[in-house]
Length: 441
Ligand code: SF4
Ligand code: SF4
Image (tube, rainbow, N blue to C red; front, top):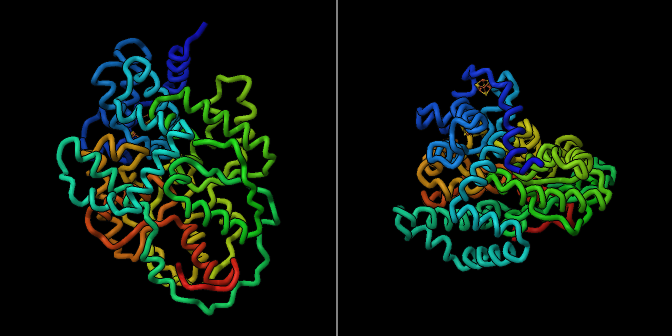
């Protein structure tokens, strides 16, 4: 009987075959570009995986763990690969194999355990909201020294502080007398469900609320679906495939039982993971067909709004620095829909940041587990964001919002990061789509 480890090695063996070692992926890789080490490039990591699969290298070795752990999982190497190597899936399998041979670090294991458990997650995010609301997160990020083990704590607190609502947006929330659009809503009352998520629900409830409101304003019926859970992306990326599969099965059961036409996701990493549920459960004959069915219903919120052509709202005069989340651009191959959503807000001037297709260094929990390299990549991104001189930054993924937001907090910058639907929501509020226009809260 094959074991999960043997299955993972076999799945890797097949997926490694298409790589022709051409190296086209190297210039796209943020870790290779910064470290200059072939072992920290996609091709080098594929060589290491092959060595493990063929029994020439121990998956518990420092050499394997170091270079596989250093990968951001940003998947910038996938669209540029002429052979269609499924790098993201290979990375998850490699991390799974490594974790089977030698447990992950304590911080990673603790975070994955918390995210997989509803009660622990609720407690964890309650603590986070208290730290944020009391201002302790912002103070801690300011006073903790940027040295040794305190670096991760300092950055984690800055990430938490960065999840506070953007007062820049409210400050620009002058009452609008603009007449609401009388275009008929486009969604034709199609029934959709929202993945509420873990981080999104715990720290960005306002983004979920904005998503529901903007979908309703565009004619969709948003149905609440109980029984849904964390999407499992963090677990899959961390190599904890069994937990990722358990979470995926729970979501598949919940969304299919709800009978909704589409499952809307407002976190790029979660959407990418859900669209790949059939790969994650490819070995599970009882679930693979249902996984394919569920995955086929998943849409990023910007993808769906752009598909129907979002209603225009009232003006929100501001400039926005837009950055692409890797799991939207590289994993889901979606680039224009978030810009179309922002384009539906009159008065918004969108400026795409330089090198917007490069990872911000957030990569799930990478910014905390790899404060040096993640910090370096993150500082480059923050410099690019600030370089466009906009009032706000926007990116449709909570991990990127927290990573870029933390960098801005640590630099004492005034800019804050929002999800594009937050701006659309503000525009609709001012247009009176939710009732009489009011000033910003
Ligand atoms: S992963 Fe693709 S681009 Fe990179 S070396 Fe292999 S075949 Fe070439
Ligand atoms: S996923 Fe990103 S960091 Fe990892 S090898 Fe590919 S391009 Fe490099």
